[in-house]
Image 1 (cartoon, rainbow over the protein chains, first blue to last red):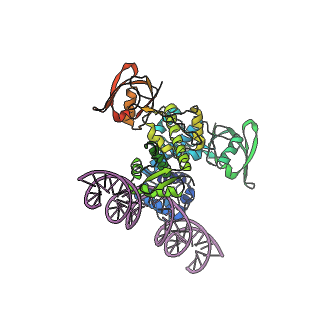
Image 2: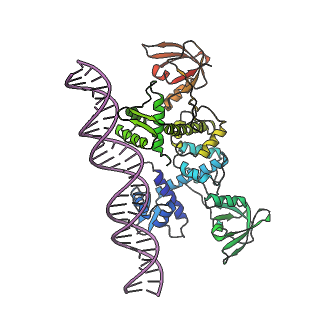
Image 3: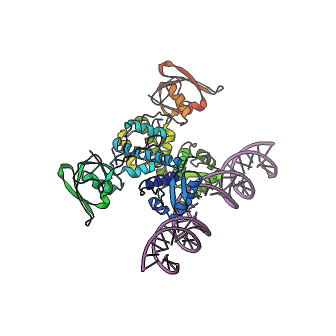
Length: 223
Length: 223
DNA sequence: CGGTTTATTTTGATGACTCAAAATTTATAA
DNA sequence: TTATAAATTTTGAGTCATCAAAATAAACCG
């Protein structure tokens, strides 16, 4: 039984949802899953029970859902396809990084293993996609690094943007126009609780202040 | 209302089915449609009635179905995506011509206009796909040429294979291994009713005899 | 603790697509 | 022309994925 696009989307959403959960917990609440997929809560419950039947998830009524080993592998493979496709569309097809997410969202369900491996080869076995998200290997193994956000990183320290965890096209264009794409050097000059903002020194010592919400979506690393 | 993959497949099958019909007729029988799509005859009837509701086809009970102008345009655009994708997979991705049909069968339903136009551009606005099938333009216009098959072409005349109208992978590999791909020079030496076969002189004067069934799938043109 | 809010699950229905098998129509041929 | 064969349509049912709204459980708070 190969999984339907719907099942793949559920697994992917659970995978991504789990990874944002506070340490320890690891059970994704149904409400969160439902809103990630833009479906009614009742629908999520029904589908998750079916996924549990198939051994792809563990389901605890009223508590939430988590992937089993096989569910996680499947989810990682969907993510692998998604991210390789994104990178391919940018690198080979010359599409803009803000327009590839939606396209990949469709392609991830139909692209064959054969084609994906060909893309992987053409791209030189890359480790991250255009947003800095890690690309799982062909076996579904993912190497993930702990990165600080602009809210948690040290101040006045040279850093490099390495990941942008939001696929909204307008946000991505904003990031690009201010030279904050993965790879760009950056330094946090100040954070202010009251104004809910972060001041950044970027390329050519340009200053820019962004909201905490946006800042939390930029992950940085030591250069 | 954008058409579902299912609707696209019906329109494509009707389009292709119509084109093989004996002159004049132009009404595709339900049975043929059903078997082209590998579905039960009753299912075809039901769906076709729905398509007629949407104005995509004309349906005459017990006689068959034909595309309306809008249905034909939609079908041509599906075919455009299918054929551009096939050519892209061969030319850019380096896949074999016998393995791209199935992949394109999936991709044709999800690939965006943006991406298709990009492929078209990268390929230099090609007119035919790897099997010699014509690629409809972005408006759904198709330029089609009358070609003879190996059963109808003149004997002892230099010709060029220009189209192979069968997507079966084994057949395509056979064609390739005997240098009968589109572009190859060829000459029909003899036809024999009794043995139901055709003798061909190909590249380097190599002789090969194939069945009439197979011969009817090779279209040729004056060099 | 007890009442209220919030999250989750259940219930009943729907739409798109499919099948198998029965009923019907059309075509064929003796 | 009339019986038989072949093609087509109808009928009844099933699957998958979804929703809205009612019922229930859990969490929160004064």
